[in-house]
Image 1 (cartoon, rainbow, N blue to C red):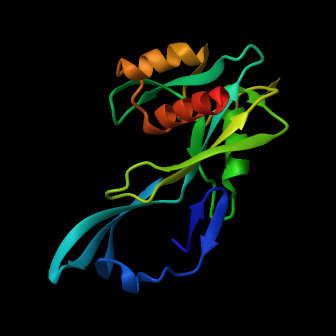
Image 2: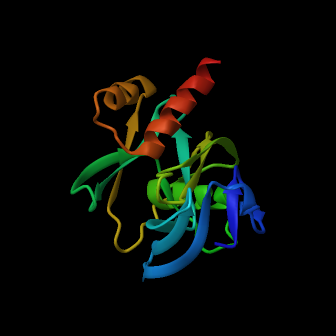
Length: 195
């Protein structure tokens, strides 16, 4: 947790916490996982001491991949936590502390879809679950896609599908697409294209 991301930039160094309304007294690691670390934070709020759960995530990147005909390249995969298949934009966690979100986005695009592009354009940044998790995702826009081949992890099974923005928006507003990064990215892309 040596740094944090703002856009595609890692901000190093400590924050000035003296002005925060919540004082962190102690942080204890409760569980170290492959993707997340879970902590118990002892905090002081308005003179009261209590424990809060905190989840640390190293960050991630995602891509709105636009095909030549304007349709978006989506990935359908089974999500164990939800016990169902989801339709999402390509995305994945950063590989190590030094990987930029832009390079992670390019890597995930090719790994999950089997396509690459020459240039990524920054679209938006988001935090997925601000109440108890510091996961930050930068979303990029990819055009002029070139076919290569998928490089899926051993534990991944991903199907690539092409969808129009209008059909994806219908699925969002019908409650059929609920993945936060996907909802935010599609709506941001749609707003950007309408400007």
